[in-house]
Length: 187
Image (cartoon, rainbow, N blue to C red; front, top):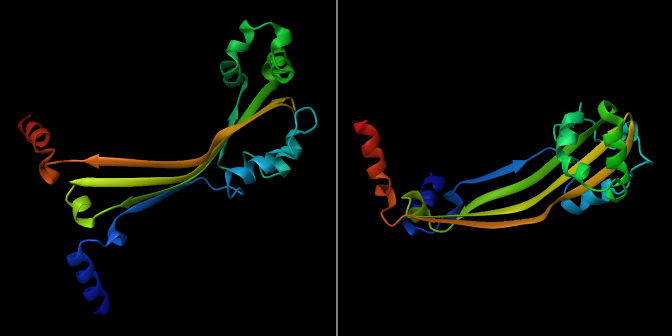
């Protein structure tokens, strides 16, 4: 009963943002932040690390859903421009991969942790007049290239800080899309 009264008061007050939806997108990972991922990957070094040592760090595609396995054609597609550059200007790992052909493959690791929440007036949002969504979090993208079982190339990038605001305004509120809906009903 007390919860119903509280909910009623919030609805009448019009400022109860806890009733607005929120969502979270998270790729399961041992990393809790972008910096944590970069620090963890600092121990993985081309021409020093092996596929087995990479797997020991939790980067095993058989156990980690954030990893996509690349075959040689995938790697070749990513470095197609390298074939247009003088060989001495291309990174040694990429050069070795291209020369190795089918013995070359790789991993793409994509981890993101994003939180989306709607802010603003419950009534304006519910009636579709004004919807504001705030997205925060981080994303890391990693490319590891192997020739046989030797790591030959590593590239780490991503977005250390995601902070976005999306604002949608509909002056007619719930009637905004009535024209499109009417046309669909006629067809």
